[in-house]
Amino acid sequence: MGRFRNLAAMPRAYLRTFYWGACSPWLSEETEWVVAQGLVVREAESGSEVLLSVRSDVRGWELPGGRIEPGEASTVGLAREIREETALRVEVGRHVGDYVRTGFRPHTARVYICRVLGGDLRSSSETLGVRWFPVGHLPETLLPWYREPVADGLANLQAPVERRERQGWSAIRASVAIDLRMRWEGH
Image 1 (cartoon, rainbow, N blue to C red):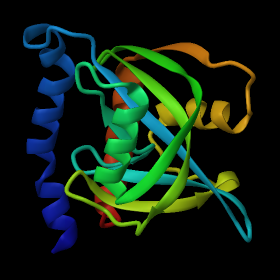
Image 2: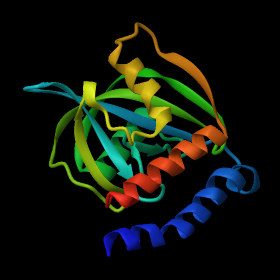
Image 3: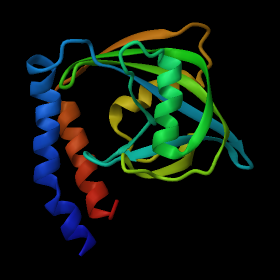
Image 4: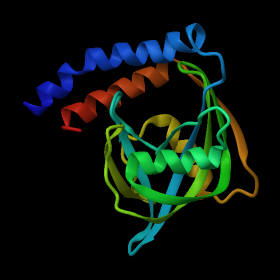
């Protein structure tokens, strides 16, 4: 029953995502879309771990975070978003870089290293799941555009990077494949 329900929810999620990514940026948005995302890292007995979350629309593992409100500092917005999505209080640290994405859902993702200060990890209405992953064993279902920010953040670069990425058909195909797998596996 869970698989059927997960698969049956796809058309609505895909229509909403199509509008959000392909139409909304040009029809109804007046300002640039900026999101802040946290590379939340902790040390465990087995080594460093990274916190990832599963979206509630198109399912796939990603860095926690979200849209910055107008007039809100990226670091303040990121701490708010992580608390909303995971119930964790974090300290926002080093700016890893800005990832300027064009094509489907044009936006700039500002990625920061974060450290947990407190709270009890849990999912929310925005995230179906949250989990720590060993740095060397990130899930195959990590959405592909997060691999570079994770690698950059773990590389301890001296200065923030600015990377430009085009999210075209290959990114859409990859995210659909990941979404299907996640739904089939019951996420």
